[in-house]
Length: 501
Image (cartoon, rainbow, N blue to C red; front, side):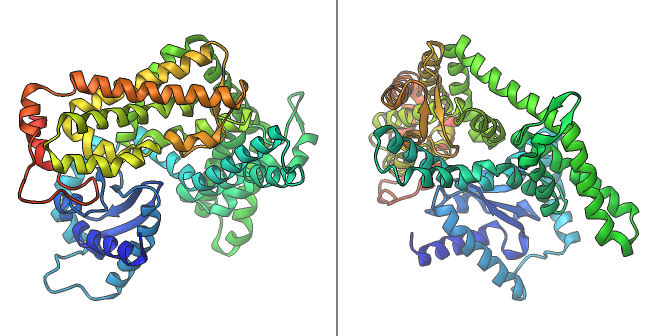
């Protein structure tokens, strides 16, 4: 997508979310533009979904616009620039008032209903934890791919001179990931980010090996990202306490010193032991779960993952994945969870086959399938299966079957996983690693994808539609208009009403 097209997309989105004065925050993850809104009643949702680059929207703690990987990273800077330009200009005469009191009065009922339904303390906490790790995903992907490449070169005996360099590049970030987690945690929870990084750095400092507590010796990195998360959270509370009680004249010296000292001591003599135990328990439980109940565990994990993606809660699993990667070099859970995307692809292909006359929906599927094969399921979820209802359930059935297939091999002692998080589908192949060897690992993962595709297709073909749904949907909503050239947001809403009725 060219720069002009990125800016055009941003310019099309901005007025449909209430204009620059309605925006309170802007961020993005791998696929979604996440914006904070003063008044959600100003959003023109149907018009927003009709923007060609928009694959769907998700109403959550933030308003999330699904743009897809790559696109979102390019559109977000343009959107930020347009918001800044709009804020510097005076509001147009026809603009609605954007004062705090005016907006509160206009959107009070909507906001209160939204808070009551979705802003539970547990959900909010999970989202904040996810927001700590999401910015780390690009580095995890890059280092994971390099680690996979290094493994191939090592096993093949090629380029021995470059292998140590690649190992250093791949491992450097992971060796210091606790520092980045601490920095982001303090930033997310309202503390000074660098102080969060400073206390987390204690965990990976080699000198902790000389410290003994309770008759036990500490190990550098003990507790990993969980310890860093806990240490930074404690640092935020200590810092806030200092801000309340330390005189302003002494604040610049006393507050950071006490924050680092108190938190550092608690981390060394408490949190590292507790977090280390928790990390070990997570790894032991994950391996035990798949070794003893692999097929059933895979069925449950693969079947439930699409609803987590739909709710945006799948990112709460990032700390678990990261902990497993720290311990064994790969996460055994991700290849199983990736089967949910395979079921989604199979279901979408079945919808394409069952509705030969619905040009609009078939165009949506054609544009979203490439991303689906690469593991990005949101375009198919929000553009196809979820609006139709039943195909979303049958897609979950396909994911469950693929997960059971991969889980069965874990139960048989063939354990493997992904060296990084983020990619899925075919994009996960370069990141796979494990005990059975690369050939066996790739074959099992490919077999799981094939099972997910086939079961998702079959389940949707036989159970994804009622007769009435087929009658209502198997027609072009507007035969006079040509099928949309791109973008899953091209009127899947036309057949949506009879499908959901």
